[in-house]
Length: 89
Image (tube, rainbow, N blue to C red):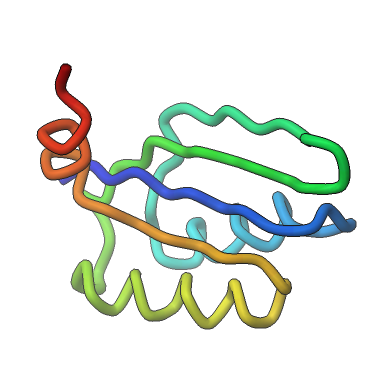
């Protein structure tokens, strides 16, 4: 299964490192990443592969949500199939 991770919040040191480390600990592979700074805000979108993770999707979502609280950003993950369907033209 593939997913889309989004991260939004005020820019500060350690956001990319924190998210990447958490995904690695969950054995979630980052396939592609796009990130930018817009003024004082950090935004990042990642395409990830969850096929080798040992936790279920909801647990991954919970862990990322809690990490977001720690980092002071909002982190979301969606199933890529649902994301693609929602964003078809």
